[in-house]
Image 1 (cartoon, rainbow, N blue to C red):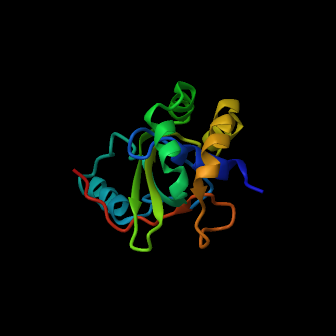
Image 2: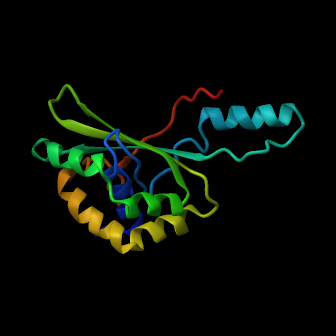
Image 3: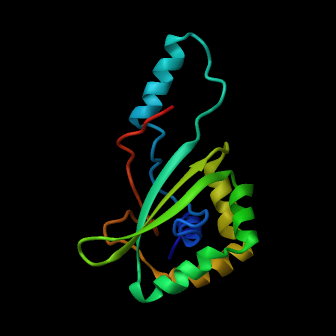
Amino acid sequence: MRTPHTRTIRLFAALALGLTVFIGSHFALAGENGPAAKEKSNTCAAKKQACEKKAPRRFGLVIGVKEEKLKYYNKLHANPWPSINQALRDSNISNYSIYLTQMDDGKWYLFAYYEYTGEDYEADMKKIAENKEVQRWWKETDPCQIPLENRKEGEWWKAMKEVYRLEE
């Protein structure tokens, strides 16, 4: 059984395929402790001034997608329901993208990226998971997805670790 946080991950992936915005879950934060976060912290301290704008938390995730469901998944994300996009915005999710690729193994995979700018990630993910329209969206998108076998317990999408970031 999935937790509300697992459902949130599916939401975001459910919405895009490089065409729109989506996802969330109970997974390790990608980027909060990454190299760029440490570099930014050191830069602010070196200048002896507070960084004015709090950096967003960044997330990267991956999941399989069924080849026979690609056309339908693309169709959903070419025209996502406005209520789904609004649920994400209302929960402090921005810069959400989903990409699709076929790997050397012949299987199809979705890669999702998004930024979280709120103060209470767990509460915002719970709000998304409890949204009736989001739950209805997941009933459409879940059958299209194939969770990876080596994901953490409770994850729908497998969280990825950030290893590099170029800040402007």
